[in-house]
Length: 255
Image: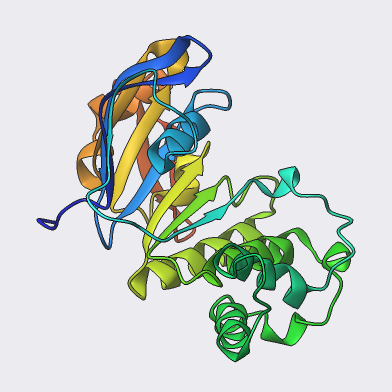
């Protein structure tokens, strides 16, 4: 990719209060990218994401954004109240609220944007169903639709497959892959490399305990040396039942 980045961090120190969790963070998101930030729980991935989006002030370095960027943000599903007394369509329509202003009510263009968002994630038929009655995968699609209703050019998704069974995880990742294929830039946080390895264009490995932040093209980051940095041991990516999984590296020498 040679286009100007949508947003980037340069030599950034990220964290809360006065103590950085990570230093020397250099990362950028270009139009059409699919960046997956991977690492252990509590490793600093969401902190990097929030810093990249400008929601968390930097403790050092610089955040660069050459022009205004429309961002759709999807928080972790378990951070959203599961007993919201709203329908799927009403939740998705919340994505239009920031652009309405204090006195404007939703109009035809807003309703059309919500319908397109529901259709893009494959849940248009659920628009009248209560959010509280949905499965985990359906709730995730609803939250993605809420972000899409804002008609973003960058979709930021925090741990979208956390707690899902394999079928729901695969379905959710297929939705994100289709959105990326349709022209959206995507930034995703996940603690499981095998959930994103078939989809990411760019990978970032994040672990504050190891003072690790490394980012590069997916093919480069899947080499043994980079994987060993993340896992602290030799691992490899293999094909198992049609999916890529991360497994301990085979040792030579035979039985």
